[in-house]
Image 1 (cartoon, rainbow, N blue to C red):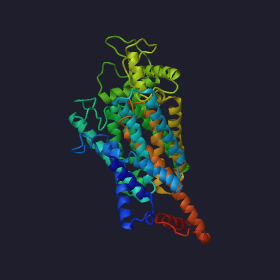
Image 2: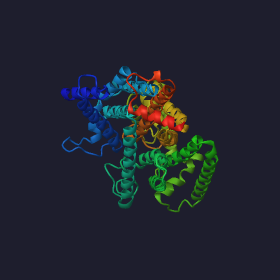
Image 3: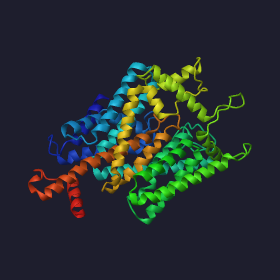
Image 4: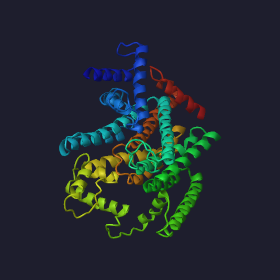
Length: 496
């Protein structure tokens, strides 16, 4: 095993060294670099599928699990090598924030958590998400390859999710250990429908705006068709968090559009809100005895968020979802007040489980999951963990907002899709029981944002440098521009 890790480190270091360094032949260096890039691209492709692609002969391990173990040591080494050796410090601020956060996660695990597999696995999931962000950061150095690899992975995952979800709606069969068993409620690659709803709300903006990358009629028609299919499946999940996230995304999308289009977007958004409000009022005034389909019944309960009414809990009538979540929030704030440094990974779960069997001022009705990403991070990793994670999230949002008018079409696409997606996920992350485990699509979108910010910084500076070199030939580097630099200089000249 040690020889295997040394081989991975050697291969990764060679992948970032120039071809004329280290005494290696050009062909050998390119081969190793190609293998390394392929490993990272395959990790990005398989990551959203979690544990569903099993490797034969590896005792039930999936491909993504195998890639995580391969990249565990080499990928951070590569990142540090690029930053130190080549001064590759683009997007170093968000990368630094998430790095300090993952170090703090490991620190809380060492100090506050039981050192058993149950808690180690939760910690490992955070490390895996961090590795996914590093993968996007490294891949961003290869402009064209990174864009093809990441968008292809996203489309493949989305199509697979649609296919599995429609199959579940049709047959009432489910993959893995779905919580719905033989009920025709889709869960796709997740445990519950709320996870799927939050994931779809996170991905739909990227699918809807695919036509920006290729402005042909068939791409426009295909993106609209796929978006409507995703919204239909989200509706069938009954995920109210996902539905609210879509509304927030519509508002955020209108905020980043150019001024000449903003009025049209606001008109469409207003019409959407009116239709949604009218539908809510209609279903809310239906007789309570009238049996509605599951998805429509869940939609009717959306109005409880705006007009909460708590009924006494009786043996025949349990608490409502909003009532449970409010109790979890009150109890969670109490935990944070008494444990400002956090309780370690799965600390929220341990805290709620303890007070299920002991007297507590806040009754969470037997629920031991936070159902709130922000609250879970706060209880698990304390104020410091929450501040670091929120700062990282805010930097991504601010960076994507700044890219909304970027000249590069791909970066503008990531901005127009990523900013609404992350804005909506602030609400969408409150719907599932937990998105900190088994929800790699969240880290995937974080990685896309980091990649876009990196390429905007790095290649934007290169373009500016070679625009200056056209006016002052002595400015050109002695080694000459690389292929990507030449491409950007040609683009800048063509614009002029």
